[in-house]
Length: 416
Image (cartoon, rainbow, N blue to C red; front, top):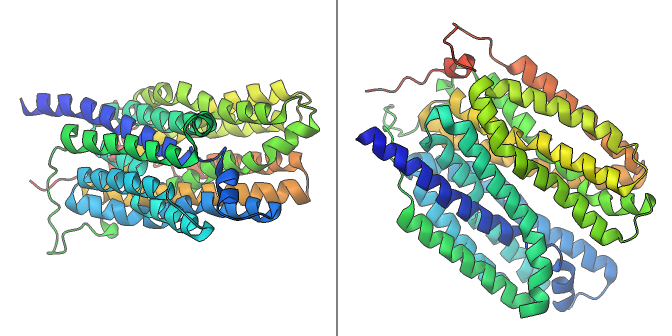
């Protein structure tokens, strides 16, 4: 009966987490299309200053989220993951509503920092799904969650483009806050966290990192997580200018489609690649996806038509879709239960670091060296990721008839 209970809970938990992650990611990316207009309405008039402040305000959320992810992961290990999701959804609902009340540019930046500080629903949901789902289904479940997160980042800018003309910019923030409040209610009343055995240690209440039998695979996955988001985001700042060079007729429309193509590819592939990884092994899928992404970047540097770039970005999204769910699965399988949240929190910080560094590096290289160079450098980084993963992959201990028996070599010895 107990296992039945568990069976029923993880699927409902997954549904709640997908809804919550989708709505919070929509809220975080919603303001992309109208952010410069909002900045302008806060008495910033110089065009260069508007662009600069827009970048600062957008990046602020990801910066504070990166710094606090390990802390929330650690607190989740100690007090339960559901509590962290309740905190994140309520915090984001309040922060989003307050952003709609900002009167000065400094208030906007500080409130965006606050949103990142209080938020972290998507990363918390990843930890809850990774630790509460039966191991044999974790790749698929994380893939479904990843599709929800990607769908949020795809829908956010589209909704942000459509709503302000209808209801106004400030009301758009209030609506976003209200929808996240629904996610808060769903998390509070529908999510059921199965209690985990408390780690038995020398009175400290946490498992020391030294208990992780082999840190190399985990550290490698942190590096690869950073590379994945870095590689994805390094192209974003140059897409519009690159399309102008390719002679696109409607540049903003084409840029939107090219940016959406990668997210759409990831939505289509994440759960399928997760299911494949559950069958053949997560390490194999990570290496294959990194190699495919590296190879797909070369023709992106050589395209002559905007539609060619769109098709290649779609295929690139398909390759990238399997990476983050598999990385989360590998980390979760490589560490003891008591530090899973903290380690997945570090992985989230690595991803956010890539999100902050990628656009900076891409913008600099594109502006100073040339657009096509960005694709070649990114290709080299993806290939480096594949090499790191292949070197860090633990050698199989004993043949256990499991796709990735080596993932379980890291010692899940629960104290009874």
